[in-house]
Length: 195
Image 1: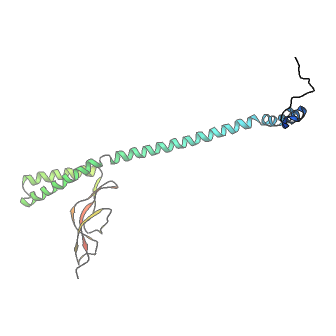
Image 2 (image 1 turned 90 degrees about the vertical axis):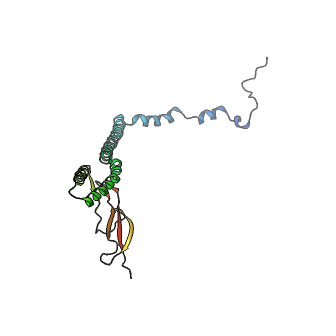
Image 3 (image 1 turned 90 degrees about the horizontal axis):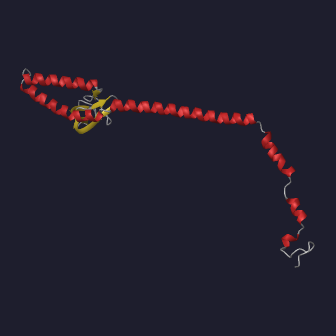
């Protein structure tokens, strides 16, 4: 068998014509790699650990602050829920109270000394006390300037005695629960006097 001699090289691409010695020279030597790894090793391990501790400390402080804010927000929402939980129930009672007031006025027109009127008056006082205990207050309207946030204008009437926009009559009382409006007052507002 013919073995190729070490002196003869098989023909190859032009790139491989350069001697093998040059390729070895292009590869990085151990002395060139050593300075980079030496820099990594030469960093102070205490400084690295201190930076790590500061990072986790900062994260812990931020997490604590977020937790405190969450607790405060939850407490505020729970307090609002308790304060206004009965709003729908109270809003449903208001039309019943309106009808009761109309019945009381009819009983008063008949006779203020009748037992029916006296009994209905006592019930009305109890309802008013209950609503006051729940934090419900009546929206003042009569004689006040019209406020669209608190009043619902049913109509206007020409009036020379009052300034334009003054409430002349209340057709349905309005109520608020603490600082929230339960129901606006239905009112008749003074308009510009007729010419």
